[in-house]
Length: 107
Image 1 (tube, rainbow, N blue to C red):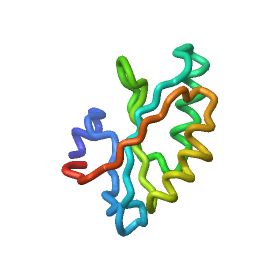
Image 2: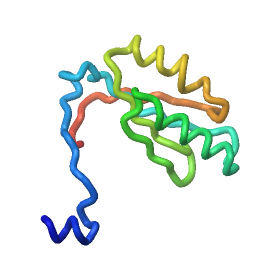
Image 3: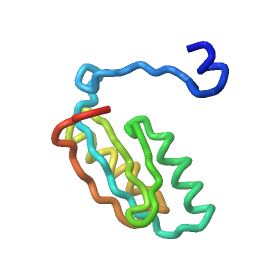
């Protein structure tokens, strides 16, 4: 372990949190398309979206959509509030399509 840490193979450790116990069992993956793919728009979107507490992961993709944004909140009402007051309010967002998680299989 020490050797792997020293070589940079292991870059950190993390706690595994039960979303239900943390009050964040309602998980949604949002496919986001941004309005323009210029550097400023991309950087502003990425800086904004990673700062939201509700966002647990963001993946920038090749092709469409541009991003998958993984959101974890308490319930549908909390997700709607997040989507309406934060995510779709970002100037870069052209389209956001939500996909609710049915069952977590891994991760």
